[in-house]
Length: 131
Image 1 (spheres, rainbow, N blue to C red):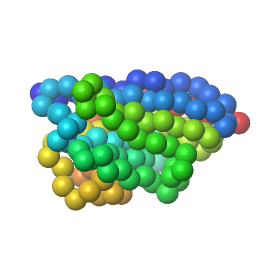
Image 2: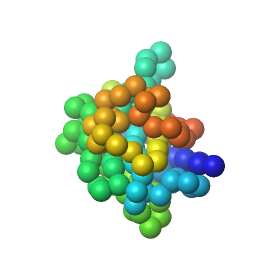
Image 3: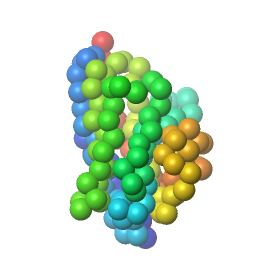
Image 4: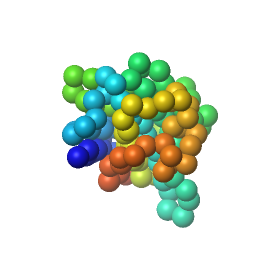
């Protein structure tokens, strides 16, 4: 059984920073599996934000490139999303996803439909950016 749990959301003013964490337990090991972040605004589809593969290769949505950084600590089976220069349009529920023995590269997971990106998902953590 796989469980994915996010933490670190909150409220911040525009221009500020937040760091999200995501820990996977069960049959996920980040030294060989993949993990990433999606976000969703009510009434809109869930969209890819960032992903990182077992070899450390990363991919980002164009809207966050240069402002967000995804990283991981294999020993803790935890991924992080460092968000800087936050904008009101970054306000969303942020979901962490993970999957086993991923192929195709992190771009495939950022730019796919959520159901095709990751098999396992957390409950989400809210990020609110005020102007």
